[in-house]
Image (tube, rainbow, N blue to C red; front, side, top):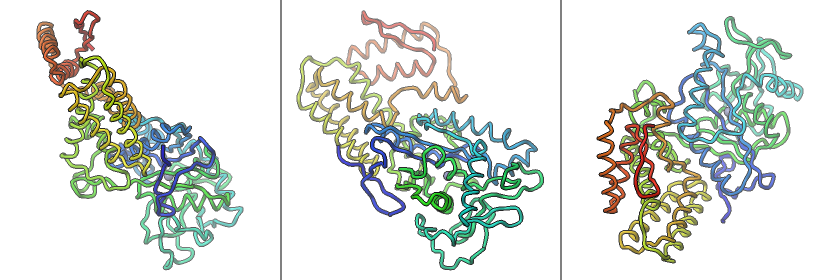
Length: 479
Ligand SMILES: [Zn+2]
């Protein structure tokens, strides 16, 4: 297998990827701010980091990944205050929702999914060490990071610090490049706001310090990979670097990976334009979790993803096509023997799939390799050139594909039900079930596997599970 190349935002180059410790990858991902349901743009980044993690795992690396959940920040405090509840009561619902969404999208849970408010002491320690090294100053009960003290400030986002006034400060967690300023590590308490009594005095952490503190607590001073959406490169990741490297004197992250934006019908997603979707909005409209996962994964992460109703439709039919293909291989009757060409074809597809992913996770190239295989095998089957012993190598290639893309298992219905989106379902009488089963058996006899599979799916949607018996008959039961 060829070497893995990843595009490092820090050097602005594609580079061979080699972890610091052989066989092991320590990786941090900026997780959600749990002030609302996560939107589809957030999930683009999370699906990307899942594809990355699955791919690295498939190459034999052990992964140690931290993802944070920001459960204290400006917006959370404001929203909780408006409702008159604690930030903990406010965020509980969205933390739960995020975990459910992750499982709907088949995102592998990171080794550490951690909350900021459980790590206040780690942040206090980190701020103390920055204070001891002279990177900070205090003003009106808050503690700020003096960016002019850190010579590397701006190296990730290439922000121009030319016009910056020494000592100009910013108190909000999110701001634009033009406002590159000294930022708050620790914020003085305000009446009615959640605050903590600490050695630094009362107050609450700024947003940026949490990621530095949690990343280094679990993964050490230097990480192999840090991922996030491109909008986090400045100021958030720039500030993480300044905090971590200021405190330890060691490089914080060797490879920074940033996912591009997702846009909707060519426009930036925004609540005011009415084109703002959470994952749940899309599932509510009847889209399958596998469709959304596939769509988000199919565009290489450094390319902007234009989310349109056409692209959703295409993703749905791509998943359908792949599932039908696997069903055809598993259920079809093929003449005995082997066609050596087929094994070669499958191995070739696997190699191309692998090479696409190794090239900075080019999922478009990887998918093309799989669809070429599907087309060629379907053609061979139609021409009766496909034999029994060709099934296994082709299925092996499909398993390799699905270890990364995770869309082949037909479990959308149960995932939707788990989120409370049960599809409206009309009851079938036992006679109707029997009629459909007979129709399916007839279709199979005629080798019309597409039709047979459609009937099986239709029954499944309506709550009927089929079980093929050894004597060639079929049993059915209610789900
Ligand atoms: Zn972060």
